[in-house]
Image (cartoon, rainbow, N blue to C red; front, top):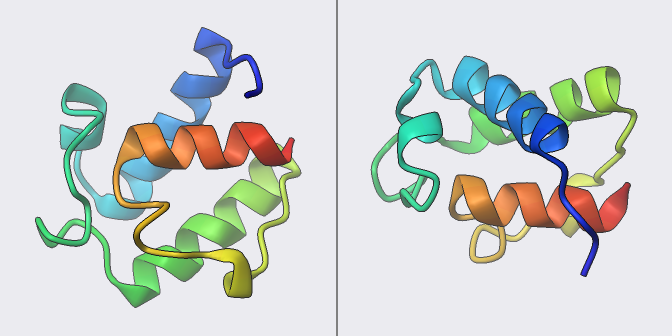
Length: 83
């Protein structure tokens, strides 16, 4: 498992809050994004594009699995494992 720094975590949460148009992702890092309606397929694409452009972490859409990317904490871990 890759070490996650507070700066990395905050950067991911900032991007996620913009994509979801909600700071709730920062306050509840275990919220189920798709089940709560905070993310959909369009937000997924936006997230992957923003992460690629701003963080230099490329995630092919084919690697995106809703079950593995369901919460902010899970997204942070998935991205940390790819950096």
